[in-house]
Image (tube, rainbow, N blue to C red; front, top):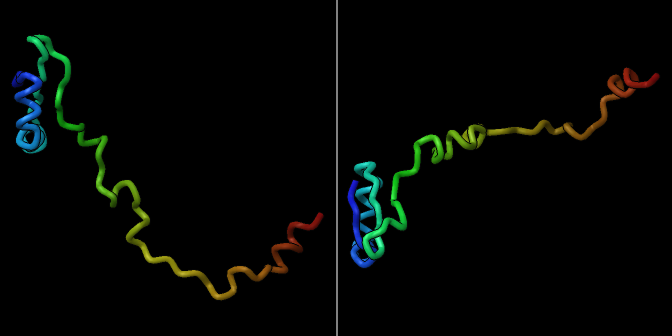
Length: 80
């Protein structure tokens, strides 16, 4: 775990984010010698690929030509 000053973190932010992402490294940011923030990787279960979050996205769906026509047998079955 690295500790950096605010000014150092500000000037090196892109490379720090690369380290957090690629090396799964946590970085502490200090102001006047005291820790004020932490850069850490997001847990893998928090970020999921679209295929996991939207499993039906890759499935093609077709709708029957008569999907909105009423089924008389169904209505008759529902009558008291």
